[in-house]
Image (cartoon, one colour):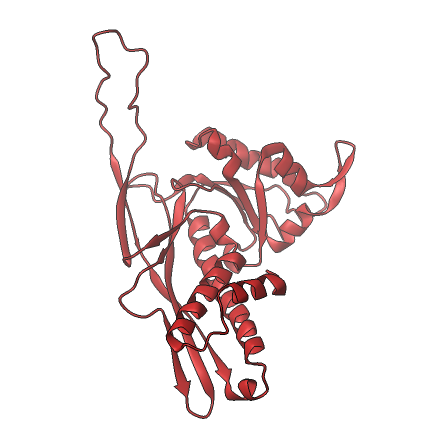
Length: 297
């Protein structure tokens, strides 16, 4: 996220307004928007808005519900489908900051606002990534351990990724269109190794680019501690999981108050959480997620 991009968001949302109620809402929108731009996890699975805190639904289990060919005068057999409960609750996250009187006197209150939004969004994005990545890694239904870490001279990321890809294809219900929505998220050190130039097929290119071009993967790095030394391959699909957030609340999600002798304090609240779709009522993990253990030393 560049300073220019952030400034464009601020200007587009009219952050210079003097109306208090409007300003509160704009501050919330700006923080929400920048947070999602900065977060890694929100790129990996669908993001869904809800107007309630407790989400409960069901997913049909896999089963044969279509037949072909069917003799004339006949009909398809009825197939019983089991249903798996899918539910979770959204938890509260908050960011607080103050625009001081001194910044207004000096004429730098807009600059302080911009920097406060940036820091607030960065902090909230980190919390979102911790929530999303920890849930996804814990929900991985398949696992592989690399022979050598990728930051080791003996490491072989291409083979390790291909092994994980083979597990995903062999054991999950991934469809052909979904093969273009496969993501790999790795710790920053491992991502840096994938981004190094090397000779592949008589061409100087990064392994990241080669994997993306050869398999259609999307590869991203993260500084979040939630993955530890591990990486994750997953399908970005509603059948994998979702990150939910509250879109409508009976209580204010953006508040401000005058702190006597100090300045204007803002509190921005967002409720969110992440849930992996379980394989069944008895299996909480999902085979559309494959963990790669110990990709860095």
